[in-house]
Amino acid sequence: MIKVSVMYPYIEGARFDHAYYRDKHMPLLKARMGDACRSYTIDKGLAGGAPGMPPTYVGMCHVFCDSADAFQAAFGPHAKEILGDIKNYTDIAPVMQISEVVVG
Image (cartoon, rainbow, N blue to C red; front, side):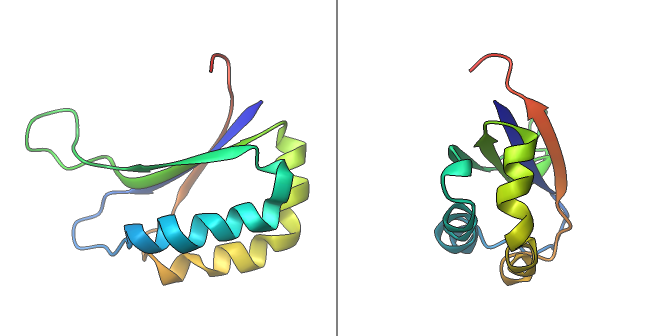
């Protein structure tokens, strides 16, 4: 199993609409990817590691798929639509990572 993490770095004054991300963007991704998206989680950053520090990431999602190939096959045909929706909830450039789930 792999996990595709999409993380949005905290930037002072940047825009990130958590409600839109939760209620519109991620359901859009799931609908387009179908069963290739086994599940997903959404995180909302609250704080950094030290008291009073902002979060490293204001928001992130983790999409779970059987393999990187399965993710690419399901995401690729809809990439333009899904990536085009980013402007509707943020002006932050996302950081992406694909990981193997070792325990979980």
